[in-house]
Amino acid sequence: MTLSSAPGKVYLLGEHAVVYGEPTVLCAIEQRARVGVQRRDDGKLRVNAEDLSLDGFTVEYDGTADEGPDIDVSESLLDAAMGYVDGAIEQVRDVTGNDEVGFDVTIESDIPLGAGLGSSAAVVVAAIDAATRELGVTLETDELAERAYRTEYQVQNGQASRADTFCSATGGAVRVEGDDCRSLAAPDLPIVIGFDGGAGDTGQLVAGVRSLRDEYEFAADTIAAIGDVVRNGEAALADGDLEELGRLMNFNHGLLSALGVSSRSLDTMVWAARDAGAYGAKLIGAGGGGCIAALDPTPETETALSFTPGCEDAFRAELADSGVKRLE
Ligand code: PMV
Image (tube, rainbow, N blue to C red):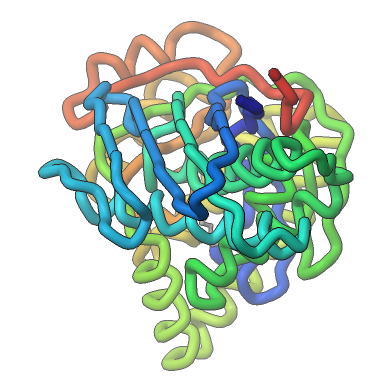
C-alpha cells in the first residue's frame, strides 16, 4: 500500500472573489486527509472512507465507484467525496498512461466535509499522489497541484479556482490570482476555528454569487472590493500586523455576507469570536454553513466558541508548513 496525506486550508481572505480573477490568500492547516492506495488488477475502484466528519460518524463505502455508497447519513456529501476520488483516479490513469488500472482506496480525514476547510482538495491531492506513487511515478508538486485542480474543475463543472488544491499540495501560506499561484512568507497565525456541524453546497453558493453579480453592478463592485481587501491583507501579512489582518477579515466577512453566503450560525460564531476579543473573524470557504476562522493568540475565543449555541466544535488550527506528505 502507498500512503500520502495532504492538509486542509483556511482562506484568510478572498474566497468567492477569486472565482472572478481577484487575488486570495490562504494557508494550509494541520488537519489532514490521509489516503492509502493499493493497486488492483481487475480495473475496479473500491473506496473505504472513515471519519469524513468531525462529528465522528463512520462510513464504510465498499463498492465500485459507479454503485454509490450504501449509507443513510449525509449521502449527498459522501457521493460528492466519491466523485472526487473517481476524478482523481482518472487523472492518475491519464498521467501514468495506465488506462485499465484499478485501486483499493482508503480515506481517513480530520477535515469535515463541505465545511470550508478544503476537505475535497486534500483528499484529491493525497489520492493522486498516493496512486501515482503506487504505480512508480512521483509527481512534482506543481504537476500534482495542476492534476488536483483539473479534478476539482471537472467534478465541480468548471466552478473551481486553483486556490485549494495549490495550497493543499504545497502547504504554508499561498497567494492565488487566476493562474498565478505562489507561496507567501507569513507569520505564525493564531487561528481558531468554529464549526457549526453543517456544510454548504459550494456549487450552489458560487452560482448564487454569480447571478447576483450578473444582476447588480453593486454586487460586482462588492466582489472587486473583496479584491481590495485582499491586497491590503497582503501588506498586513508582510508586516506581521495581526490587528490589521483581523480588521480586514471582519470587513471581508461583511462583504461575503452582503453576497448572501453567510448564515445565522456563521454570523453567531463570528460575533462570539469578536466579543471574546479576537482581532477579527470571518466565514471561510464557500459559506452557507460550516466553519469560521478567528485570529486570537489568547484562549478566549476558543472558550467562548465552545459555549456558543450552534457551535459544535471549536479548535485551534496549527499551520501546516508542508503540503503533501509521503508516508509509506
Ligand atoms: O468551501 P470550499 O473549501 O469548497 O471553498 C470554496 C471557495 C470558493 O472561492 C467559493 C470557490 C473556489 O473554487 O475558489
